[in-house]
Length: 414
Image: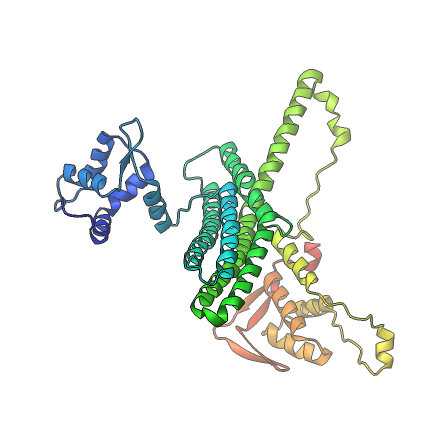
């Protein structure tokens, strides 16, 4: 057989991609299953199935499981193929802790090599340090992508799993991967202290090497920049993972608690009867409320705006007017809307422009009343748009004429 070169390996992978994709999705296969998969994907110009099987084994695409006849992808190749498909593996917190232990050891070796001018170890220390920093960055990014995929699969449920099984995976991801990683990046935890120490050591090493060994000083600086990027990215990835998984985890815990409560209630009914619950006295009439409720994102955005608020000194309105301030002109939009409904103009926006210009209203007042009219009154749009001038603003809209029928008046809505 010809030597296995990277070009030959990648050419075979490109030619047999559908076969490799199915094997990747299937997992371990027996010899008979492998030949069946090869037969399904073999094209007329392809070699014989036995030749394709031999190439899969000879090139390292498949290997045998210990003490079985099953064949599977070697782990490095499987991770590479899943990376190409954006299917990332999960890295445990213990693996990340081992990386941090390596970084601590390499920091000590870096300080020793910098202190010894004749040492030849520094390039190798920097090379290994680069590998560890990038491994941490890519593994935590892989965790984020894997969690995002898990959330998508939870919502799509392509495997038709039960709700209990889907929630079990959410809780497992949260407790196994997110909580330990949160402890790793906490500013008061060990990992953060080690990374801060490494940053200081590299900054000192760069200063020492700048004069006599500028090439190595450049290598130290490159690793320091890699460290900055890694620390910034793992915090961002962790935050994104939290935002993806936290709502599902909280829902899972709520539903789990609800299920436990229901079980206790059912047990109580079994022993004492439903009448013992006194539901009429305990449960009031249900009330439906459709206004005044805010979604989570709206509330969060509002809180962020509050966080950026810069307080100023309180200004009394009376005092402001005494200092020459002009009174604030407020237009009664409810009355204006009633006048518009009564007037039934051929062009509602033109009528509002003239009315608000006389009353000193703002463009916000104009858009508020016009939007309310479009939603609640029966209007007929014109065939061509036109421009409306309101102060410094030029508005473009289709003219809308009012009819006598209304979709929903304020009185009916209330």
